[in-house]
Length: 307
Image (tube, rainbow, N blue to C red; front, side, top):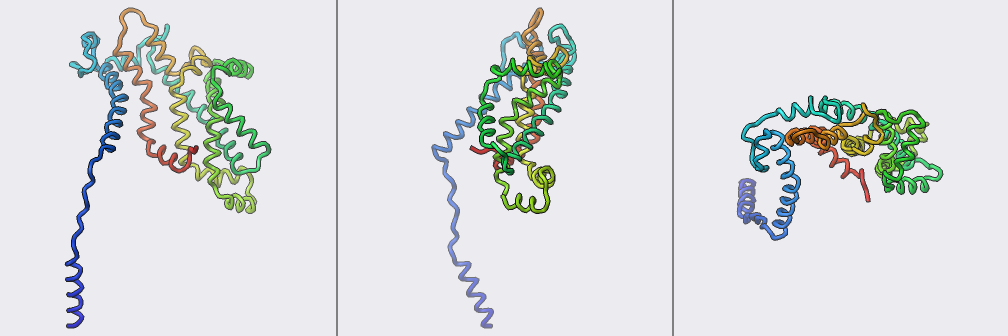
């Protein structure tokens, strides 16, 4: 009975404690200002995208009415089909599909060359005692800020001397050369966080340079590789100047075909076709961001890019 009474007394004590209600968060002027600012930024990007998308789904008769913000009265994908299969880029009227294939063929070797060179260089500079590493890092830092137009002619001479100028491999080599300074610094900063004890233990376990890289460093590089891949895919796919300078007549990327399609025209300008072509060109990087966006944020917060 005593135990029962004690338990009842404890329960009564617990139940008699006052219930503390959480105070509702008040909407402050600061939060309203932040919300307004973010809304304006979103509209700044979304309104032009809305106009481009709706214009690509309209007929030319509707476009001539001048109501750019109105929804299409007749929804049609004819402009998308024409831009993909029949639109003229210069004297070639095969649509954007030819440029899309060229862009894919440029993207794959460019990614392989740039990432392979940069990841090994960053790993060596961060975790191995490389002679003149400080001077090499300073040189890379300086090269990252050199405008492309200054080194354009030396790169043309270099690619011509090795016989790849005007080819897909020529464009890929230039992309790899231009991306190496920034990517090397990113990889080097990321690998600086690897504890030195791990490297010492790996070296004592008869680990060579490539064995440590393949068995220890590469498996822990998933986050940073996602970051670098997204950056490189966006940069290479959206490039115009390198493609038009180093690509041949049949190896020009999708952006060059788009520019020729929009700027060179005969007769009436087809704005719906131009807008559809622009969206088709921008679609692959957008899909990459939608699919891998969360990994991109995770890679940055894991220490991929530091000040």
